[in-house]
Structure formats: C-alpha cells, structure tokens
Length: 120
Image 1 (cartoon, rainbow, N blue to C red):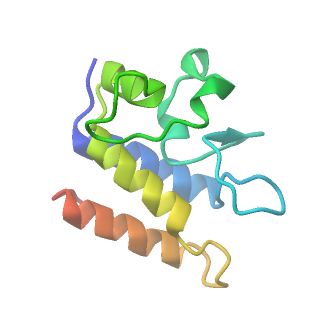
Image 2: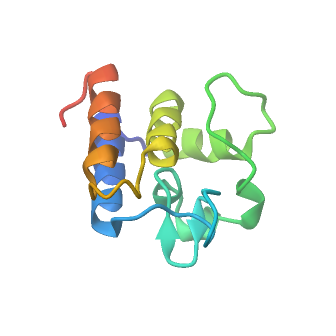
C-alpha cells in the first residue's frame, strides 16, 4: 500500500479543514498527534490500530534513526516522510488563533504544496 504525495497532502488538507482547529492540550500550545477526538496533520494518517501514546515524542524526520517509531509507521503505510514533516510543521506553526480563521493554516499548507510541487 502506498500513497502518492498528492494523496497524502489531500488527506491531511481535508482533515485539517474539516476539523478546523489544532490538536493541542487545552490551555497550552503543546500539539499532539491525538488529543481527545482531535488529530494533528500526521496523526490523521495513522490508523487507530497503529496509534499508541508511545508515538507522541516521535517526529517524522527524513533520515532519522531506526528507533523513530513514527518514521517506521509512515514508511510502512507508504507516506513520504519529508512531506509528512512539512505538513506537521504547517499544523504546529500556523497561527490558529489569529482571528483570521483558517487563513494562516491555509497559507502554510499552500506553501507546503508549492514546495512539493502539489496541487493546492
């Protein structure tokens, strides 16, 4: 099973747009792959049967050591690690509370799409 970069991007884009908010611990800026019913950019790519709390400290990172569980799962699922890292950064670093709704998030996602030669 494998995903094209466009398919991965589309899955994450749709998820974030429909969710409409960041997956963070309440009253903090600490992003989580999953918190309650919310999922971050990469969290939405991990099937329920593969998600565990042990994944939380692992960040998708190209070329990272073999003990990066997140890289292992994303690779096994057929997602591009570099794209996943960039989508995660877009989720984590967008100003979700700027008063401009989804615009800051969309701007970050548009930048990721351009960087990876994907349709936005």
